[in-house]
Length: 219
Image (cartoon, rainbow, N blue to C red; front, top):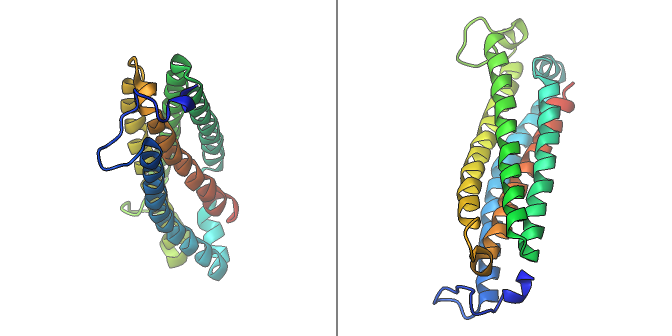
């Protein structure tokens, strides 16, 4: 069990920490502090979307009809499953099952890539329908209603920022997986898996908030 290695000989501790336990606590506190600031960013975007929905319900509903509900729903399932595989990776790391942990991490990265592929297809469909802000000939309800345009523009900002977080997460996960496949990784850096897991679950949480606010409430 890796938990027994918390204060073990093979565990690396930075010189400015008194113990490995203190180092783990500081790392966990640091990632939570950063995630809260990121959550505030998305909360502001989602709050504006809800305000638009309350103040301009007809315009918002008209704009939301152009969103690809089935893609948003499918991507929600994809990220929920990716949270499961990431949780499995964390559990395997605690048990010292390195090979199983690496496979679960790769599955998580693959699911993240699937999300991006589906989102890219959705953006392509939006481009074909001239929904994007920089395209001329936008649908009538978007061209004539400032509230509809604002909602759609907000949708792109929120989903693009989320996609950027996801792409960053996949890149970090692949790099971490490469390191985690090496012998002795778990005895030294098991906490890296748990810290990263918080970031991945944050990405999933943001989409779980985005899907109902952008796709469901406005239909």
